[in-house]
Image 1 (cartoon, helix red, strand yellow):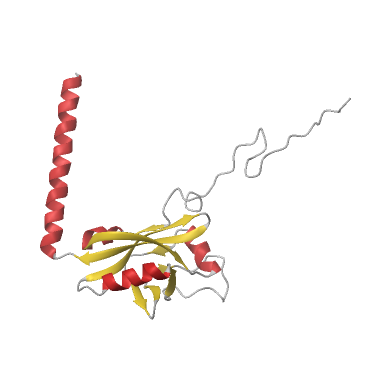
Image 2 (cartoon, rainbow, N blue to C red; image 1 turned 135 degrees about the horizontal axis):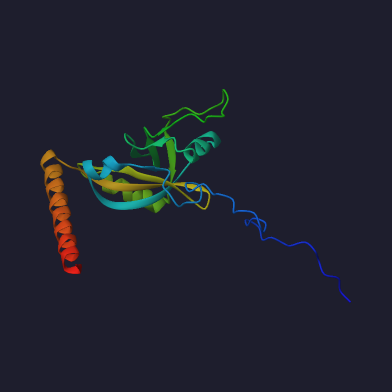
Length: 183
């Protein structure tokens, strides 16, 4: 007759029974963006979006997990058949040593050759550029969402704001009428 086992086998990644589950970092698990460029939608018309990997050093990845990345002044550049991300600020890693990374160094973007060729031809059009819109983790790797963007004039920004305000007022009126009908 077989003896019964007294221990419980726990699948990998789960916590033992009776213990609360381990909290996961929402940035590292991909549930929340590590960095988001809110100014991009205000200053540019975002035409097409691409996903690119980013070649980073270890301390840079750890700093991104801590939420120390900033895309505000960053832009993409294609040179000699390679794509680069310039002016992206990643703060120093809190537990780093003297070998910590340079905060605004030029980082290489990892894209397929055909995508690079396509982006190069599209950025040659006057007024078009590559703008990073968000930085996030996918399967433990840092990804950057690049948008092909066309710069907005001041009157474009005012028109966008007017349209957004009109939509907001229309939604508020619909909600108010629903609330009155529900009484």
